[in-house]
Image (cartoon, rainbow, N blue to C red):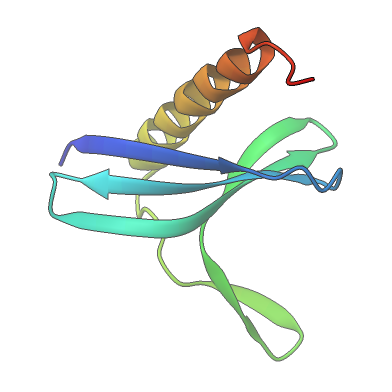
Length: 93
């Protein structure tokens, strides 16, 4: 299974959630609402989830660590590209 597209929507709310990603696999299946969150140890990826009572349950998630890493790496790479593009754009006056 290959990651064929990653799209990032940044958040300017000043909160812990920095962006939301959509990841497409094999140009056939997409997972939306993967969050990039600022934690105590830096950024991490949180899979889409829904509230069930007092807790949150993942709606979609990888079953093996290597797949989670592959997804996280692709998201962080695209997020870094988006951040660098935003930093290099001239300010609108």
